[in-house]
Length: 334
Ligand SMILES: [Zn+2]
Image (cartoon, rainbow, N blue to C red; front, side, top):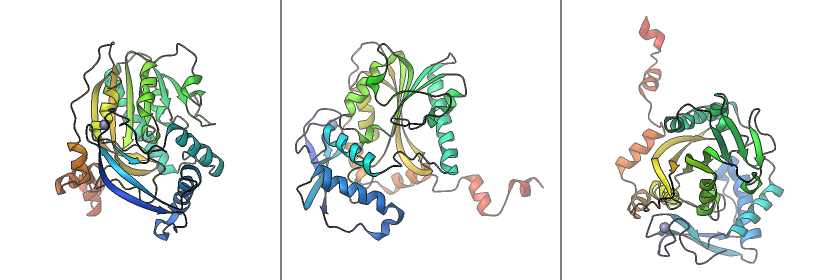
């Protein structure tokens, strides 16, 4: 575990403390977590059996990069610590990565696949594309590309890719040398990595000139960064600015950066998406983004809360309102 580390996004070494979280080896996992208790209990074992095997009590501090607004906790797991976590979880937990989706989750995944396809297609025209999903589970987010005849590859530990999607390996170094892609997807992966810059660099190096990298991460910086129950699953906490900076720092041109009410495993989550393009060797000046956005998101105003609830569809739209009022389309057309 690293007690001192530069910002994994911008390399600065100026951290502002946000919060501290205390954990004890003999702490009970709260019953209020319901069905999540087993999940959280296993992560707690990672904390005390893998990351801090000698500790009975420990404190983790959440910290904000004063230069870019990225949030981490300290001590921070090294890349070796993250590998050790996955080895432990693979041994102890068989259903990693949600391999048994519910019907609702499958429908939401299909919608997500279509949304991703459309935002990429706007920039890539109609030609046949070579598309890679890095860390994409069984390839469920490639279905909208696959059904339109694009070549779909997958790099993931999954054993069962969907029909029509070719698994190329568990990791990027198993790709044949010289392999390139027009589009690479990387969804809900980067928040788990010890060295996110290196992964973005590796993905960028696989892109054709003019190729597109599509990344999505959850926004966990909201009214604080809550690692009270689970400081093990996510180790990188991005704001939209720090997430786009991650791509810009690797020389990619940002085409789009948006906050969305996304879906994940059938549930609604708030996320940031970035669409970035490989664009010559010009060094693109990193965006002069400060930590202001992160500080605002740590203490959101009422208006920010309303916008977020709207994006997460916590308020009904017109159709939802009519439904709640018992007015169906059929009633209206009578
Ligand atoms: Zn930074």
